[in-house]
Image 1: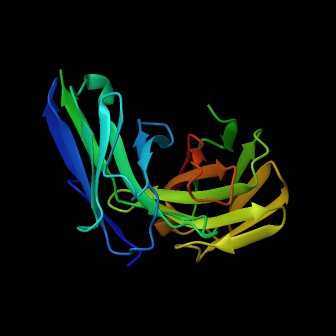
Image 2: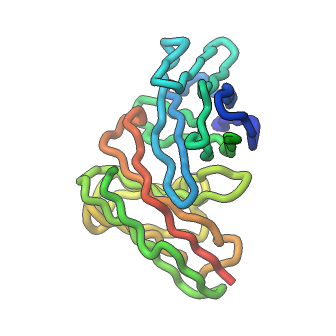
Length: 113
Length: 114
């Protein structure tokens, strides 16, 4: 119940295309869903996050879509660029004083120039 | 970028030796975390701290201990390293008890145990 399942493990997209990464969870107590981006040799960095009271959040070319009834959320990268090539982690956490974040296993994204 | 420094950045050691990794922050954040990252497993929490001398176990704490004697420093110790502890270790910090506050990560320590 504490797991966050992420797919695909790896993804190759042409420059200018749309990259889509999906995540699913079981625990309905999760109330915060961040996405992290990690470049080789670096630590993960927060990219964008969403709360379950909204169905979509957009920041530039990055959009999170959230489906509360299906317990799924996804990251869309529009007009994908070679500089977007990185590993992406979805995550979930609960409020109420629990300060731990559960991470998905990651998606390695490669954008072809 | 958040002021987080991990040391060493790379280390190679032998099975059975003790190893200590250091995380130093300049942000005065209360919460500090140690994760390990392995292919196919993503990021897994080892231990975390919610204040000086206040620590708790994470998902994969066996074989690891931590200490936090100052706000800015969080140490991870492998008392007797094993090959299964070969991994990349990340330290993270966060400002608030609310998990909605983002965690900021260091650049990692690559540890190889032969």
